[in-house]
Image 1 (spheres, rainbow, N blue to C red):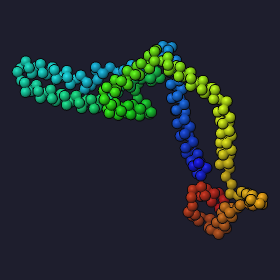
Image 2: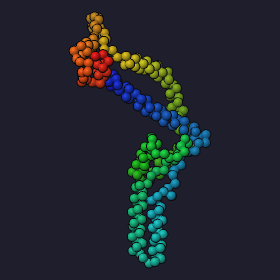
Image 3: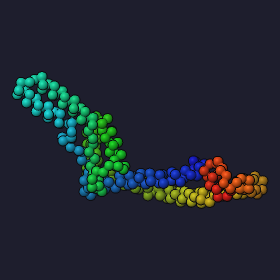
Image 4: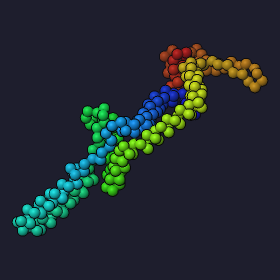
Length: 243
């Protein structure tokens, strides 16, 4: 609709829409192929080891060690203060903890920037808002789906999707061909702008519409060559070329 009203939106949004569609198609293709790769021996998802993450055990370990030292020295008040301090530090560390993203098979190191970095930030933001029980349930579900038992129904679903695409091919292909022809016709019409065009009225009479040309011709004949004309940018190109 908007491309019919403002043709420059095709130039602006066309590449963006094409790349976005390619990303989505690649995402869908990865999910279709993934269960077959898992059944063929690819290593599946494994939950990160939380025993060494900062803030999970460090606070309790430091608190217990300091408690023993202070208990041996008989300083109960100092031990209580240390435990309270470590508990607060543990809570702060839990808020600041980040989800360690496993490297993909095409990655050699975790580099900042790009879509994967944005995805990591989104995962860390979600992890801070999720309770630990929800995170454990999510991790266990991913481990099950990537296991050989969980990959079987995923493979069946992938086969069903492929079968649906193949069976729908007979009705989809003609629509794709029609869309490509329509897009080609629109591209030709947009790439060959005209200031003079012909129309036919309801009675079948032929009319030549040259209002744009007559206006540009008047500007050329009645204004100095170095005159400045205030106009929209697409008309500005025509004024520069004709008038």
